[in-house]
Amino acid sequence: MSKLQDIRNLVQEHAVSVSSSPGDWMDYMDTASRLYRYSFSDQLLIHAQRPDATA
Image (cartoon, rainbow, N blue to C red; front, side, top):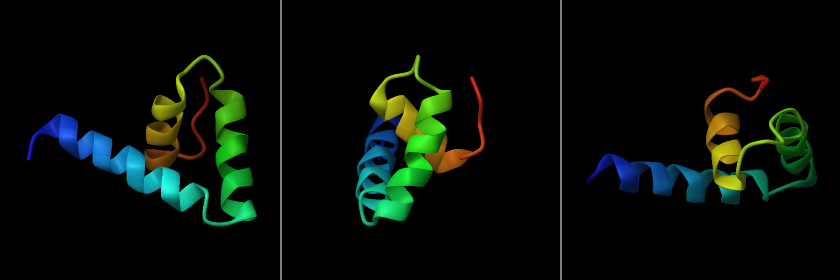
């Protein structure tokens, strides 16, 4: 499998993960609020790897 496909799979899996409960969604939104300049998929990837990241 290619790296691009691995990244797409991670985005898809993490999107399902963060939308599974309100608490998970709020954790994601906390990260996204610090990374507002990034696209949704980039925010998901950053949150999957390092939820406490800042821009």
